Image 1 (cartoon, rainbow, N blue to C red):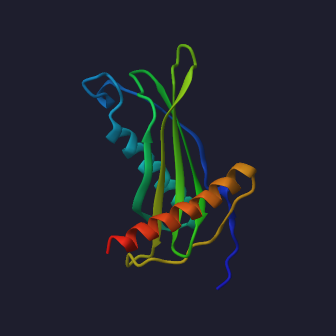
Image 2 (cartoon, helix red, strand yellow; image 1 turned 45 degrees about the horizontal axis):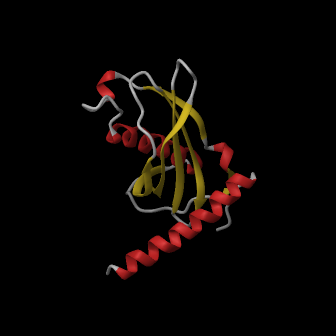
Length: 160
């Protein structure tokens, strides 16, 4: 079955903005890593769902990097987009920047790659439409996603 593709921009979340509240903080006064993961898992799932018009389940999360702490009052600017699609799965890249609302200074706080599988009403994997990278940056992410997948599959087979 041949399927038309969909451009990256059609499902991407460019700048979902979230404020860091006191109940999001750990005893050190910085944002809980788990809270950030909850936010980005949810955003990545929305991007995946928007891309294929189906319920998508998280298969795995790769290369999670906590780069800097976010503090109370920081504004989190979150970006997520489909990097690459395969038959029934796709990689969604996520990046979070913390912005100090006083100085507007920005720092990267997290990047991660989520793999989702699209499923039907019986929770069986279904074929998804290809993603069409358009910009140089999107093409770069598309190619890097393939390398990550190849590496991940090689790791999985070597552990069995």
